[in-house]
Every structure is written in C-alpha cells, then in structure tokens.
Image (tube, rainbow, N blue to C red; front, side, top):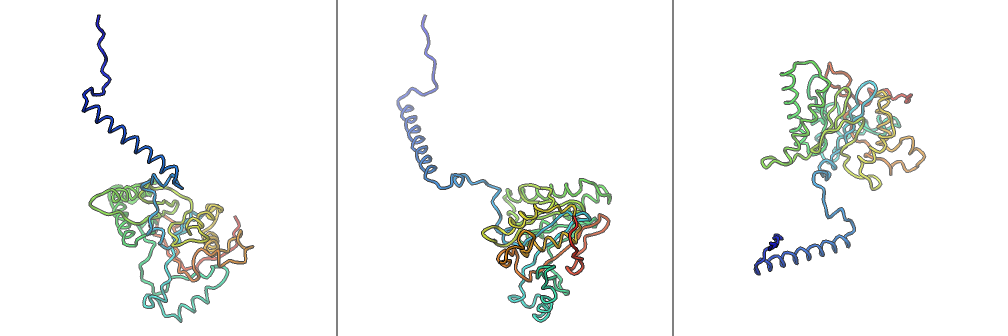
Length: 314
C-alpha cells in the first residue's frame, strides 16, 4: 500500500521556491531593522502614533473656557484676549480701560475685567434654545460658529418633533449628535476637520463635546492659550478644579474660587510670595460670565460686579 505525501502548501517548483526565499529574506531584514529602531528609540510609543487623540493646536491656543455645576445652577466663564493695545478701535478708549482696571484691581476678582459696556461681540457663550441650553467653544472661532449652527438646527428639530417639553435625555442627545457630526467631518472627504471643542451646558449638566465623543463632567476647563510652570494652563486649572466640591457651592462662591485659581491666589498657594509667577491668566483679562439657572428661560450674562463674593461656607 502506497502512502501519498501530503502537500505542505509550499510550491515545489524551482522558481516558486526562489520567490519564497526572497520573501523570507526581506521579512527577516525588515524585522531586524525594526528591532534595532525600537531598541535605539528614546520613546517607543512615538513609533506608534495614536490617531484621533492628538490635541488640536487651535483649541490649545484658544483663551480658556470653564464651566462648573453648582448648587443653584451652572457657572460658565470664557476669557477674551485683551487686544486693547493692538486693536484700540474694538473697545473703549485707554482712559476708560484704565479706570476699569483701577476699579477691578482688588483681591476679590484678581484684576479681571468685564467686557466693555458697548461690547457687541463676538461673544463666546451662545444660547442654543430658550430652555437655558448654551454652547461655548474653544478653537477656531469660525468652526465654533459652525458647530453652534448645527446644534441649533438639532434643537429646532427636536422641538418640532417632541414639543417644548424638556426631556432628561435632551441635552445628552444634542451632545451625542454634535460629537457624531465632528467625527463625520474628520473622516469625510468633502468637508475638513473642525478645529474646535465645546462645552454644552444645561441648567443641571455640562458636556464636553469633541470628535472623540461626548462626556458629562462636573467641572472642566478647555483651551488656555499657553503654559504655566511647564504645564498647559488647562491642565493646571483642571488639577485644581478636582480639589473642590462645586455641587455644594453657590455660583457666587464658585466664581470667587475660580478667580482665585486663575489668579494664582487659591488657598494652597497663598504661602507662595511669587503669586505673579503662578498666575494662570494675564492681569486685566476680560471675562465673559454667564449663569444657567432654569430651563424656563435662556441663560443670563452677568457682570463680575453682580456677584456677591462671600466666604465659602460649604
């Protein structure tokens, strides 16, 4: 009885064996070069870039945006670049700014300024609907406006379909749809990636929205536009935001605490004489402040002077 030899799957012709030998040699050479490169690399993770999680340069360079869920609503603060010297036609005269700086230079607000009384925009905090929902974006302003228009269209469609009654899932739906829209723009061949991230705010929630997803947060800062002591401003702010229970604070107390963090005069830094070195935003930065308190009315922009900075009694 003859036993047939099983085929191994490797071609037996001389030419086919030659091609297999060349392929094996090339694969061996490539693996040797890869091993050498991995061994000599200072950071092995740099050989494998992770797409989709690289920080956007426009968002990082944008002035900071902060939001915190408080006991009586949500506090939203957006910084504006102080361009009084380079663009004097955008604001009041320098004499008015000097007077504002003198009136605001005290320990309660850390030398921050309100927007000028005649300021007509562009604002950074925008209403999405009449239910108190608002959107504030960091990044390229034009892309932030485009994202705002998309959010308003989604809100109009929801109101036309389900009426004016507020659903607990309403803001979550908007956040998820906005994140999906950003992701679609990033992979689409017909539109470019939107260079922005945003905070979607309701009277009880804050959602971080970017191309990677939508995330509900208690308090968060995005943007920042620079570094402080070798750390990104947003990272330095967020590290200190973790140390406070914002849900037990009123919005007045929360704003006082937030301004102390931005000015480098928070409680754990008061022992440091170099307060200017630890300051996270420049002196006389203009702040746009809003409070989102009720779903029955839009958010309200507020002046710094309208907040009663009382001692936090959490």
